[in-house]
Image (cartoon, rainbow, N blue to C red):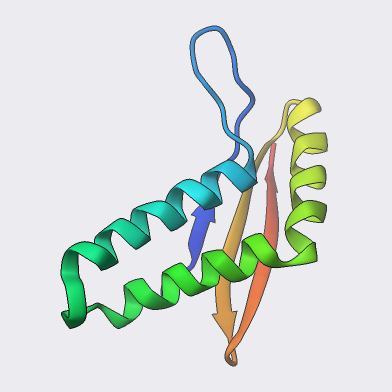
Length: 98
């Protein structure tokens, strides 16, 4: 499965922003809708993507990463959270960009 990248942003008057949780929920809903469209045929990669997002949203790490990302955003930095599986376990990484 390719890593899932979530790029949170603060809202401005010109651009609406979203936190990591909102982005993950939006992506999870998109995956679910696509899975429902495909029916029983399904797509294993899409199923894994959905499962990774559900796992992330349920994990205690998601709150910690959301707090950290909001702190960096408040400092004017850009952040990204990467969700992937390594050795069958979900891995979450916060990447900070200047």
